Length: 621
Image (cartoon, rainbow, N blue to C red):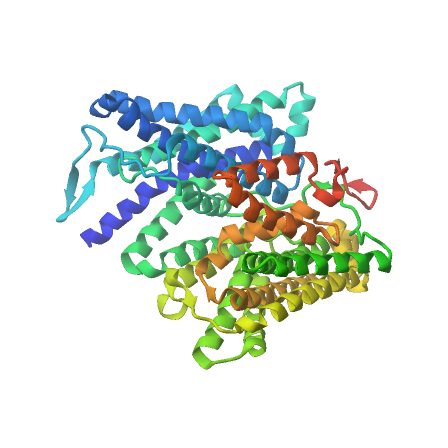
């Protein structure tokens, strides 16, 4: 029982870190309506700055409690200043964009900040000393609990009370709450929203930096902190309800306790339990514990799905260009062949997500789950039962479609960012299961030694990939012009009118969700065949981001957008990686520039963001 109680205290201590991150992120979303995927970078910045401050720059500070605390506060202040710079240069320009474009733009910011910190601080971990005066532990029933974690356990409620007082007792706080509820009315009353939003972003990023600094006495600072913490932060924010600080506090406690209980009782299923908790809450309450009821947000002016070019001759010419590029890659040797296969599989994966987003308006941030299920389905049936290429591919498609059939029934009640985050939570359960179910998946070692394609069949595989991608593009074009596709687009742009017209929107959305997952599963099976090995990373968040990048770089509402995006992303990864050490940062800057200058991608270069009210029945909604 004493050990169990210690685990509960560990969970509550960890909840403080989650709350510092989640409160900042939920404040930023509440006022600016920005979904900041780069929030973990400010957490990492605060940790690295504080660690270097007390080890390399001013090591004498590590012997004084006051100076050590000052170093932590300075780390938070620098993180706040970095947040101000990000708000002025990027966030302000993306404020009118839909959430999914904001996520991709801030993912580019994550890449840029990661490489900037690697350049400034180096790639190695930094072990900071224990906080002076709090190096010991307290004994509880024969078990020991660190004194520093006692302090962080208390800090969570203290920060919550301070934020509550700031938001309810001050003029600035009341304006922040007003901006959260109705920013247009606040502007009409003569309050300039720009300084208010800048202040909120600085406060949110400063809280993230403080959370990173407070981690130092219990773990080293390293360059993987950003991605490790940001996913669980999104779990807390969405579970608590977007824009609700009190909801974030309750969700942080809940997730912290689930994490602690998982470590204590089922350590191999801890990650699965965390994400299943979020999924259960959102299925029960689609708006989170304390969030407001989900309503249709203001939309960007969506163009009709563009089938450019319009003539069949031009489409045939583009198909011949794709074949010529594949032939040139094949002729350049094994490296060019591998890059071409990656690009074509990524194109097919991007098309699977484009089908769901462009036609149905369904945003997924966890589409890699179906790619991973397809890959592991093909790999396992091949290794366990000796299935050949085509039956193994069919098995991968079946596994992906079956799981999507279950997930679709759960997630399609949600809309917008809640749908994206719920899909992320369910996808993370798949990734966590593949990572921790070692007996089935091989864990981090993966499944290797696949021989679905013989060495002398590589050229045939590449040609088959080209033809399959062209067939998928043709199929997307045909579906966009069909009654089914037109009905989906009507439900995307004017759901109330479409529902009143008798269209079976719920059934059609479910169908496009499952169809999209099956196509992603096919891409996963082909990935397993091309690589000869499968690892859990194929179902990770970064792989889902790759699919989003593909369609957003090329153009979500353009037929050939995924083809252009897959070429650009694969070329950037292959060529920039060979030429530049910090190529991730360069890629991040390019992503941010494209999202700001041409949010509709390369094929929609002249498009600019506009918000238009949707007129329904003579009124604005």
